[in-house]
Structure formats: C-alpha cells, structure tokens
Image (cartoon, rainbow, N blue to C red; front, side, top):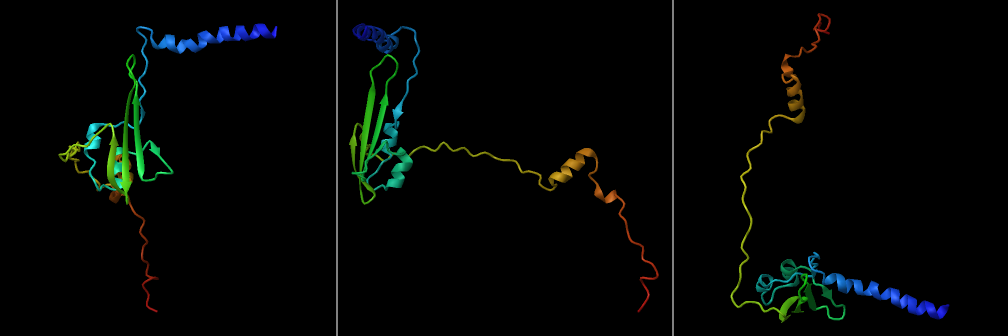
Length: 167
C-alpha cells in the first residue's frame, strides 16, 4: 500500500506544478505585469551629481532596495520587470558614498555630462477671497431668518428713585 502512494502522489503533483508553465503561455490570457524593486529611470540618474549628500540622493532616487549592514556607504537600487509574454528586464544601480557624499556610480545607468534641470509641474491657481465677516452661527441663523439681533428687545433694568438717593 505504501509503495503505491509514492507514484500516485508524484503523478498527481506533476500537473499541479506544470500549471504555471501552461497558464503563462495561453493565448489571450491577460496577466498583470508586476514591477518589483525601485523604478529607475535615466532622468533620475541624470539628476545625480558628484558630492551630493545622502539626503539629496534619497529625495531623487528614493530609498535603496538593499542597504547592506556591512557596507553602509553603498546603496543598491534594483529593478525587475517582466511584461507579459516578454523576457525579464533587470536593471541595477549602485551608489558609493564617502563622508556622506557620492563618489561613484556603478551599474546599468550612466549620468549625463550636461546638468539636467527637472521641469517644474507646479501650477499656480488663483483662489477667490472668502467672505469671513460672518461667523458660522450668524450664517445659520441668517438662513432661518434671525440674522438681525438688534431688533430683539432687551430687558433693561429701570432705575428707581431708590437707587439714585445720595448716601
């Protein structure tokens, strides 16, 4: 009985393992392309300059994928993408620091010689002036019809002759 279970389990596990291979190559099946790692673009690398500090690099490139404990002055950026039906694309960039400043760039990208200024995408919007003369309570009571509080009669104390007597 035990000897027959081993070939039977191998025979049933074989189709389960091959499903991913079969399903990856079916025509007309949509698979989502998942990008892994840091997305590295040439425009980002072009902004890097010698003697930039770690904080400036962090702003441009984002946090590194690998931050080695044994090599704290080396940041690794890895990027992997496998579009459906195509070969895997892997890109790698290593930044070497000395005294918290970039001294070397290694990997699949090279920074350009000409300084690149990132174009600004900021848009200025004119905001109209708000009417802040009335409080929220005054606006609410204005909707109900009680916006003029001066017309409400106030209780005044009558001065009597007793109050005006000299001591």
